[in-house]
Length: 322
Image 1 (cartoon, rainbow, N blue to C red):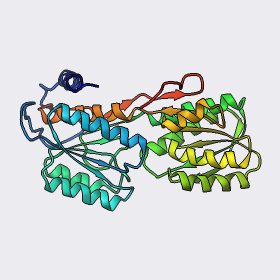
Image 2 (image 1 turned 30 degrees about the horizontal axis):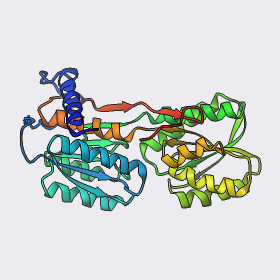
Image 3 (image 1 turned 135 degrees about the vertical axis):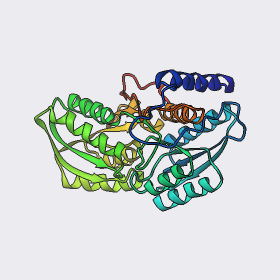
Image 4 (image 1 turned 120 degrees about the vertical axis):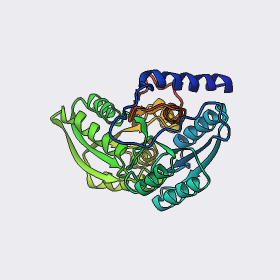
């Protein structure tokens, strides 16, 4: 998207926020919160920090690209940090951003509870905090993330359809953050509608390709009648795909994300049958919109903004990209 178009999109979003949340109201929702800055859109030296749980993943790379484009479109300077799935590093990164005087912090937590102290510190420093993709404990101003329950549910429904409602299945789990827990909950709810489907194994692939491959190899060995696997993310699913293909077994694979390699594998009509795609660029753009609305004077912003997801199969995945 061109810079001027993106700037218009953000300004339009923020304008909508002022109407939708009733900026003229003095009443805060959900208890006492810090006062918004009330700064105007023309204020200079707006500094925005973005703390990622990781950046060695196309999902977060695309999110970062959208963040940088959106920040540039409103004339803001940025500080970007990669926690590398280390919560101590993420807390330290955020403390450094606070010291550097960030006005807005977008946080994609590596551990929802573990980052609470950093969120509290940012809030006390008067920083507007919006969690993106995964919720963060503490006094955040808003959370923007996918409908993760729906993501798991859609994948589970597709699996049940492909299995004709019967067969032994397993879950390739991940780190214990709210989005992952919700995906698993949604998946379980979908397969629970089919008495012929039996969940026989759940193991943690840590959302890592190499680890997931090893875990899937163990799953396959321990469950000779396994018919399908649900992975909580595509990165893990791609490791699982390698193990399934190497085994020569007829085991179907379902996941969440919309990773380019996952889309390619689905279109190849192999074991990988579906992924529920997220929209990381939309999440960060809207997250920044929430933060800017607060920064520019909105008394209230939505505490949570859910973003739709969409199931990608061989029938509709062609041309999809983040």
